[in-house]
Length: 103
Image 1 (tube, helix red, strand yellow):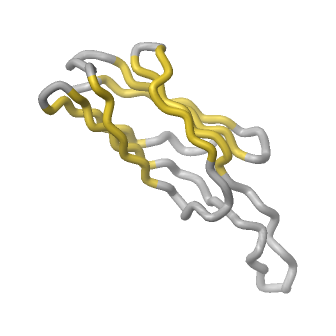
Image 2 (cartoon, rainbow, N blue to C red):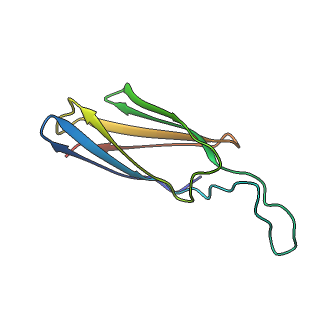
């Protein structure tokens, strides 16, 4: 199972800023190992976020996103104590979901 995401969500005025650091290798399929064989592609394809179970963000990613990607977005109307959850799914079918409480 992949390492947990680091999620921080802080309220400022009428919106919350959410910062997510994902742990993923994000291989493009173009690199080669020491023996000269291509390293298979392995990258996050779908990212979604929910605020208290309601969708607030969906994104389609590809192999050009860097290793251990960082994502930041704002949610209007979020309050301290709300729950933010972030889910990703990669091209090998692995998924990861983590959540944080808005501070």
